[in-house]
Length: 509
Ligand SMILES: Cc1cc2nc3c(=O)[nH]c(=O)nc-3n(C[C@H](O)[C@H](O)[C@H](O)COP(=O)(O)OP(=O)(O)OC[C@H]3O[C@@H](n4cnc5c(N)ncnc54)[C@H](O)[C@@H]3O)c2cc1C
Image (cartoon, rainbow, N blue to C red; front, side, top):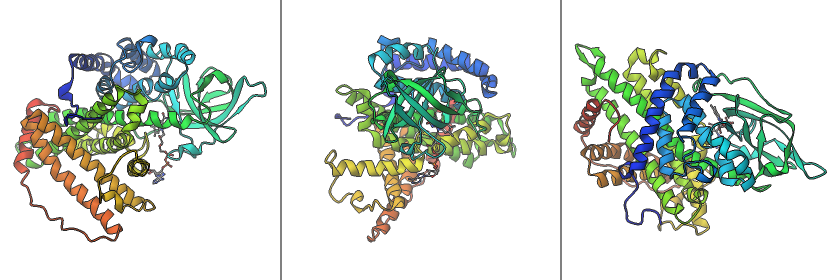
């Protein structure tokens, strides 16, 4: 059972090993990524690959890969820590994330022994760069509607694969593609496809709003002969791979968001102390302090949720493999994906605002952070799709007896044919889980700063829950209970939080 003792896993529980991997990642970013950032942002892929190889030498792309294939075989918390550490720049992070996550994990977790021996040791060293090819021009959210096709050859030795994938991270230089296609137009299946094979080609770099340094291309498969040995998992069971990899990707996305938020907050704190207006630093203005406190508070909550889920997964992993453990918390993974990406949107937006006109200039990092942040609400399942998934998954689990919902639960009121209601119910779930995670962590730590942040968040979360709840109840034709709550004066609380942040000059708990 998860959280059997009523306590949740938090960053305060990190071991020496966790702290060491955090330090290694931080040093790596400072020594290898930062000095090369300009070249990376100008799509010098030779530099990007060199930096990636350096991270591989340090084991940073292989935290979750078994030692038998050259990996570090560390726990999920370690992978989350590395994710956060490399996320200070989203372009590098997306390349690193594909290498360590969605690109490599399909073969690591679903490959045959022979496939793993053939590919994983070279993924660990980054000699091979992988890419995950699910999306197509006409099939994004609706990924199972793929038009890519595979047909078994008459002699049964290979499949002939044809299709076009879109928006593929690392597409420009990846060596190994996990490609999803339908066998005989019906059976959704994953294939491992090498770049060098006849019929594989890539499109031009997409001209994106953000992630300017990342490679994002279409990838084309024109009658590619894929040996039957390169079917990944079972024919017709590709959705198991696609969705499970996405569950884990969603959890990690919350940490990518957290890493980028930390960068945005650090820039904002520095600027707020330095920038003078009306004869004093802008950090002395109440509204700026309000912003800083809200930014850090929501980051604290995202971090608390993400590590709470990580702890739950690790608990279940004692008895079950990683993918089964993550699947158990698929609802929470969707919720934290939505929450983390929306916190990132809020934090980077406020970061630009704190910088005033300079925040709108490319010389200031927050301009890039703001543009980079936008994609997080779109990939790994759009937030609309995740809002649909969270509640429907929960209802399905209740219907099939997998979980028991309390009597007279809000979920009884939901008409699943009305998407707006389903999404609002997910918001109730998300802010409730968020609030509880923040409260539990603050209570466990007894830190004055965390207790203040949990109190500030309660106001925001309660307002969100009320508004979403009103929608659900009204749509169900029920009478609305009175919602009036006593007002809490949080001005001094936020000022205390801001003072501690300005003192630290960075995100602190
Ligand atoms: C920079 C970048 C990198 C990416 N990397 C990869 C990668 O490495 N591999 C990969 O496979 N893909 C990748 N993607 C693709 C990404 O996952 C998709 O863009 C995303 O899943 C959305 O699909 P779509 O763009 O087709 O939008 P659509 O699915 O067309 O959605 C359009 C809008 O309609 C909404 N919508 C769709 N269906 C519903 C519904 N049922 N209910 C309510 N609203 C709905 C969506 O939420 C969205 O707001 C990447 C995309 C980008 C931009």
